[in-house]
Every structure is written in structure tokens, then in C-alpha cells.
Length: 136
View (spheres, helix red, strand yellow):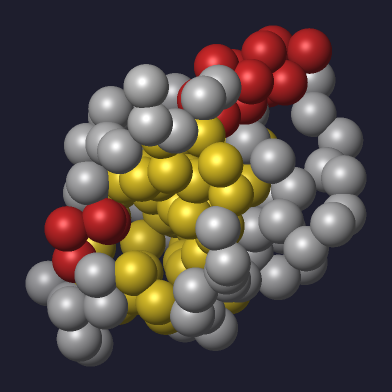
């Protein structure tokens, strides 16, 4: 694989919120996962980019929703809704280039088939909406 690409195997299927007011259709399992991930968190203003540390933990919730964080139990996580969705993201590998240390809205994600390692599509990151744990 090209060393400029950052590939992430997709191992988990949870749930996350729709960003920009649209309600994504989630399965009951995805909705339960979403509720667990966002419990006790408050949404902030959308951001155009996230830094390298906040890109370490990626969870694919559905073809339409991705969650990024610095670690699984990070204080702040970022919900991203790729423009037009990202078909088959939940069952393949996502690969994207990071020309800088930031990951930004509009950057392209390649969807790579798990078995053939061939590209089966692409999509583009939307805004990153921060969800921060409420103070206890």
C-alpha cells in the first residue's frame, strides 16, 4: 500500500448522530451504540479540521457516520458525516491521505475491499462536530 495512505481496518459497528440536522437511518443496534457513545456529552460547534491526536481512534457507526477520538474514552470525540455518505464503509477498510497533521473537511476517503485490497469507492469528509463529556 502507498505509504502516504493511512489505512484503518473497520472492526466495530456502533452508532452516532446525524450531523447537520439530518437524521440518518440507524439500526436499533447502531442507535443503542450511538446513545452509549454520546451519553453525558454535549455537542459543540462544527470544526473544519481535527488534529493528528484526535485521529487515532476511528469508529465506523454506519455508512453515513464516523467517530474520531484520541482514544476510546477521550473527553472529546468528533462525529463526521461524509458528504453523501460513504457506501460500504462499515464493512471495508477506509484509507485516506494526510498531507498535513490535520484531517479536514472535503478530504477524500478511499474505500478498500477487505479481500481484494482494491478500491471500491470513495467519499469526502464532512464537518467534524465535537462532543465533549459534561463536567461531573
